[in-house]
Length: 520
Image (tube, rainbow, N blue to C red; front, side, top):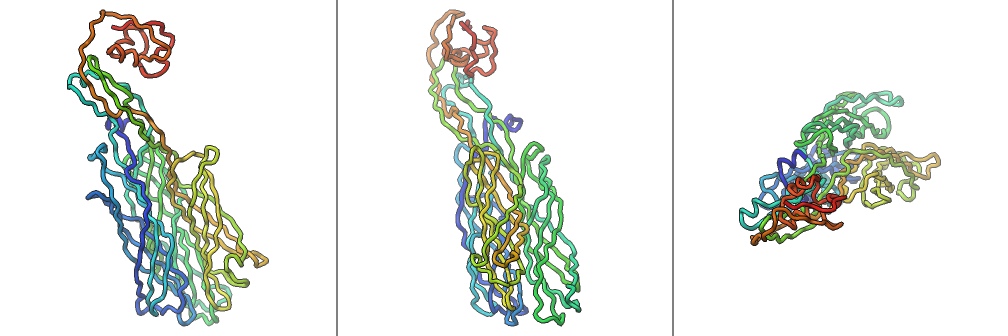
């Protein structure tokens, strides 16, 4: 309420909700010191949060894509490589006339990879095409005060019927980068007599939040960067040693700046792991991990809505309109557990193989209402690297999942991440069992339709002569406002003359129990 006391009759309203495709294409050439590509296993993109710019009637987004490449070399061993590309996108964004140009536009953007097509075009060269979807939202401050025309004197004497309406305000902080460092010791296996040379093949990371706390002008988040590593030891004397997957968690705590945030608001943080650098020395890995954190918050406030007006000695021609005011419902980080089992034949996983690497991702595909609650239906995808008889292969297992939000939402915006996906062969070897922890960064809203005065034209009229005091017998449908407007008298003056409350003059019960009124 305090914010709108300063802003008068203004609300935050949506300017743009748009989802559009983004096609990313590039050619990746590995440096000469990298092994040649005998067989490509996968190319996985990680799209970092975009930088946002508004100007020239459009919203511009730009950012970076990290491609993680896993392949088999001519020697039959596994190798990994990384490549970085930039992306850019623009979408039209015009500010309507009833929006306040002095208030900054609040812009959100999320780029989600959809599918990757890649092929080897030379021993160290790849052609990659990545399809993504860009979800863009923009909010601006809209004037809801009615436009009143007519003589200045009539406008200055006008009485307004106003009420408070609940509405929401989105708060978006800038993306902040956090660099985490840690040292991981990798002990040789008991079966290996020699330590050998440690080699990092592949690294992947995501962010898991243990807690997010809303504070004044910010969000305090505590979490972990969950790093999945695929390692092998060379020169051990062992014939064809198998790579080993390790998962390492690096805790962090960071207070993110969000202007307008307060302790009664709700907030969420979306996290992305960018570059992962590892300095390998004997049995240790010195890790340096880039983490990008995007904070958002929602708060509820009240706007002053004008329902009607009149001016003594003037005729008011009023035009009303039904406006949509959005309300905050939910904004936080939540987790759920997904467990499923799939037959090996369905997954494409051969019997007797050894599982080496498991990476998970999740996507929410459907939202629906269920008995006053919000049902979210999605799919877990578990990407598996396996080895059989010295040959490497990849497959993908999927499993549907559902989760129910207790809150009813008209619109839900979210990201879904899978910090860890455990995959194991069942004892009989006929099925793949998956367990995953899925974390959702949720923001849900609902919409209320509020009827309000949009425009009023005042035309002076000759005041009719009447007695100093008149007697009015209100009907059962009359309100204090309706009677005051009929006689062209201030509602407060009618209330004072009759010893009744001037509060809520337009409420149906404002004249409850009143048989007659003295009109001053």
